[in-house]
Length: 124
Image 1 (cartoon, rainbow, N blue to C red):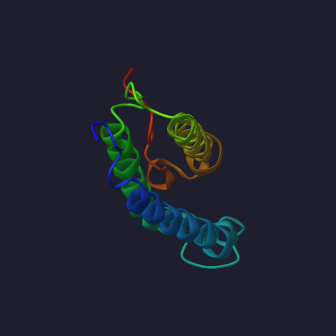
Image 2: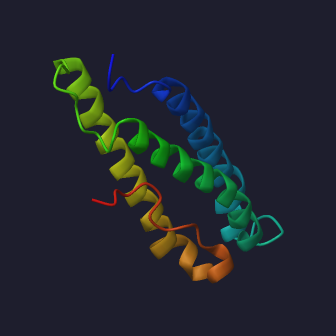
Image 3: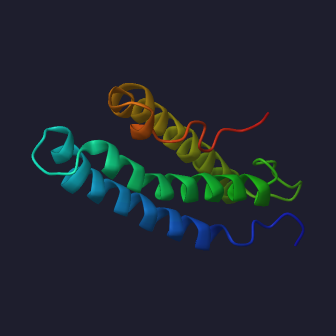
């Protein structure tokens, strides 16, 4: 069928693994480094998390591409519309979370401590 978002499941599974790894690393490594409990300092560990954020950025962009920026086909059912609405909310929340990390948390450690901006924001 035209417009079916093939590949969404695999991307979301990959994003789930990346987010889980990101949270575990933040709790176990980055936050203790920020408190001075482990070495090296937080900038080193924050930089290591950037790869995850870049993958999340690519995955979010791929979801938007597959869904044609969440434009529903004419024959879309309610479940399809719900999926797109929830994916939109998820990517928006993720972008906001990363923005807050960059601006409020990581920015205090200088340019090397900042994650990438605009992870999954739409162009439209």
